[in-house]
Image (cartoon, rainbow, N blue to C red; front, side, top):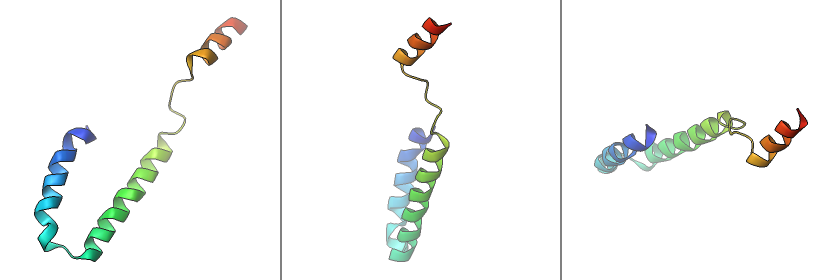
Length: 61
């Protein structure tokens, strides 16, 4: 979903370049960094275990 909206967001940001000062771009960059850290932290631990771990777990039962 996010990857589908990325070109639209880049086009919108490119259109706003002449209208924004450095402080605005700094805040936008900081917002993206914080969002990446937040969603990256939320997604931790949601990956399935490797196949080797699952095979060992199945052999124990």
